[in-house]
Image 1 (cartoon, helix red, strand yellow):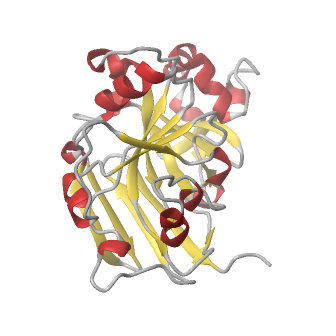
Image 2 (cartoon, rainbow, N blue to C red; image 1 turned 180 degrees about the vertical axis):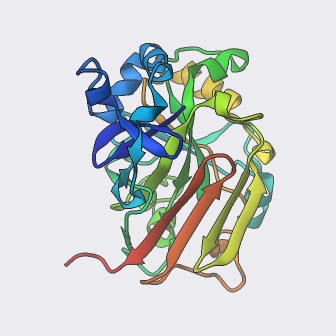
Image 3 (tube, rainbow, N blue to C red; image 1 turned 60 degrees about the vertical axis):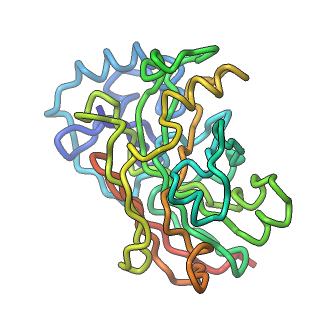
Length: 280
């Protein structure tokens, strides 16, 4: 199943088109995509019963984040060995976790303001929680994943480094967390733990890897986080970025106004964000 937000409304994607959740359920489910995760199992059963003939065309310009208002947003740093090496950091023994504040999240094709001269790209696989996960073992973790999406963990490196090891402000400027273009449930993949991931800037390849290179795969992340605090329905986990970020290049490369960042993951799709001048 693929779940999207279309013109602000929860929508199931079928055969290249979309079916409005609230209308097709006669109000049983809300138009608010975030609320669907609170009743995930019930919603999955409903979605499987939908008639594909109800689907109507969807314009990508109307797509918003498939998880627009999560309560918690976790992000994992240094989770690909090659990225840890290019950053000059030791490979962590447990997931290096920080937060992106929820208000920074944006849609898959939204423009993103450039707040400073050291704005960087980081394509990431995003996992979304389907039900309360408290002290969940890695062996059971996939049963708590609603689905996967593409994310960009945009970073303002000067602000990030100015705060020592506290990354959150440098990762949470307006629009710094685009997610999309939709959420894909794990059963749609032959192997959800082994997907190609990549990023281009102005058509030039910057990052390319596979998610089976994650040091801490999704089950290990869920086990570690849920041992510390409960993960809630609709929570978001950015799982880490591969090598190839701008700050690690020689000389360093950073995003400029007008640049277009394309981020993709095999079996999910592509998001595209243009860098613009800050408002005001």
